[in-house]
Image 1 (spheres, rainbow, N blue to C red):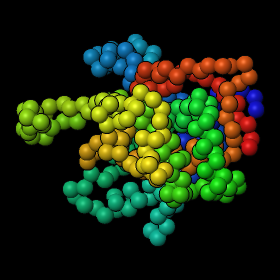
Image 2 (image 1 turned 90 degrees about the vertical axis):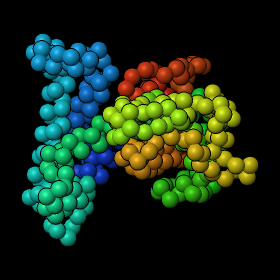
Image 3 (image 1 turned 120 degrees about the vertical axis):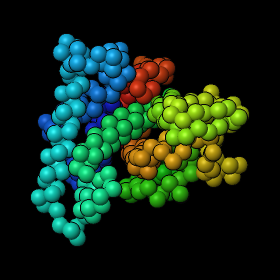
Image 4 (image 1 turned 180 degrees about the horizontal axis):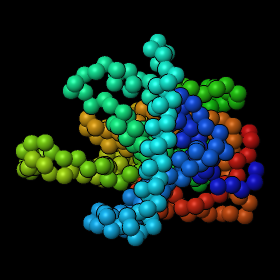
Length: 327
């Protein structure tokens, strides 16, 4: 019941989920490599949204020599690559052809097929692991930080989620992703958290591969295209109350969950976020399990909380504390 900042607990949880999927094992939260991995992800992410990134883009060799943030970032990247390479070597030494268990195992299976035109190789494997940690840790952890913040700001919504959880899965059953089909209100709240927090305003850049047209406008080959996700998730023509936190956006008149075409937090097109399914599973299971076990409140004496986003590579909530009271 003591006030706490949930940030690191959520980051540790999300990072270990990704580790389990990629490496096939979890880390102790006190493991030095694990803690350095988390710090490295944070360092690289912060660098990408700093003025030093643009200086590095213009003067890479000069920046490497004289700018400490550049040196720290490159050191973090080197560490993540080295840790990934070590994990790959451990898998190669221990793997058996009939015991494919995790992402590295499956990727090594593809490398073994020896297709001359294939892009499956160890260099790309290590870079893919880097991308998965970089893209999958902060985004999901940040969304969960918003989730808990909204639950203390809207205690009536938190209570309705808990009432549904109690009625459907009880207080002790382990929640799985399939349970979302029986928990329409909880599912709607999670979707509204993603819509309302909108942690990625602009999708990653794309490049047109040929001359084409979009809504009558010419788009020449090699044009860099940025999708404005924010414009869709807050479009008053698509959402009844776009500027309000309203789980009813994802419920029909009978209380059944309904998806919306304008719900695009993972971007759009053939190259949507490759971790979308994993992120959906993490958000549902972690959020539901936390609300099953705890009631979240503001610390004693705190009447208001700041919900204005902190602009960055992702739109984070401002630092906050809450109390987690066992139910």
